[in-house]
Length: 297
Ligand SMILES: Nc1ncnc2c1ncn2[C@@H]1O[C@H](COP(=O)(O)OP(=O)(O)OP(=O)(O)O)[C@@H](O)[C@H]1O
Ligand SMILES: [Mg+2]
Image (cartoon, rainbow, N blue to C red; front, top):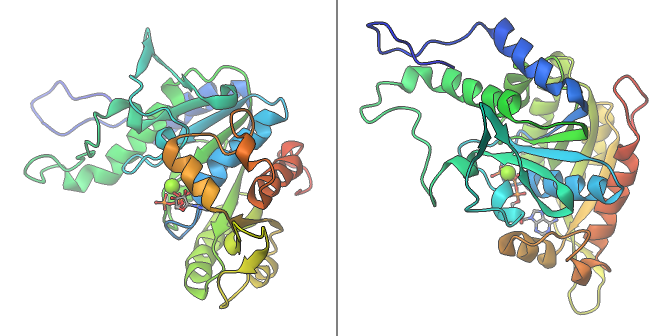
C-alpha cells in the first residue's frame, strides 16, 4: 500500500493483480507454502505452526515462519524473539533468526511492548478500510521480507473461517493448509466451516490436526482423555481429509511457549520424552516430503 499524495486522505490501494504479482515473485525462492488455520480460536494453531516449523527444521530443512496474525501476534513470544527490532536492508525486511535457524517475520517486531494495532484511526475514520489495510499489511510482510531460499514457508493464521481464503487471495502460492481443532463439537463445527471454505476456494487441505484431545499425567506419564464430547475422526472422514496428528495436552509445551523456549530440538531436552514432542516429530516426518500436486501425507 502507498499513501495517496492527492487531496483525498483515503489511502491508495494497489490492484489485487499487482499485489499478487509482487507476493508471487517473492515466493519464487520458496519451495512450499503451508498455512496453519482453524475456524476456531485458541485451539493451538500457533503451537502447531511453531512446533511443526521446528520439527521440519530439525530434519535439516530451511524453514520460514510468518506470523499472519497481525492483531494478536504470538509467534515471537513463543520463540523467544519479543523485543527484537524490525530489520531493514534497503527496502527489504529481513526475517529474524529464530531457534533452529527459523526465519521469522511478525507484526510483533513493528510494535512497541503490548501496543495494539489501530487500523480504524482515532475517530474511527478508517473503519471501513480495515480489511483492505489488513490485507495490504499481510501482503507487505509476505512480499517485502527477504525469505531467500526456503524449503517451507509456514503461515500461522489468525482464527476465523475466512482468514485462509483472505490470505489465499494475495498469492497464487497457497500450496496447502493444515486445519487444527480440539475434539469438542463446538470446535469441530467452526473448523468444519473453515475446511469447507478452503475446499470451495480449491486450497488443498493437507490434513487435520487434533490438539489437546488427551493429557499426559506429569506424575505417571499416562495419557488420559481430556474431552469426552467428540473426536476429530468423523470430521476428517466427512471432509475427506487425513487426520495427520493427535497432539496431547502437555503442560511443558505451554510452559515452554510462555518462556519463549523451543519445545522441540536444541535447548529443549526436558521435553525429549514427551508424547506431544513425539507427535510433532512424527507430524514433521509425515509432512516433510509432501510436494504440491503429490499424494497427501
Ligand atoms: N498440546 C498442547 N499442550 C499444552 N498447551 C498447549 C497445547 N496446544 C496449545 N497449548 C497452549 O494453549 C494456548 C493456546 O494455544 P495457541 O496460542 O497455539 O492457540 P491458537 O489457536 O494459535 O490461538 P489464536 O486463535 O488466539 O491464534 C497457548 O497458551 C498454548 O501454549
Ligand atoms: Mg495463534
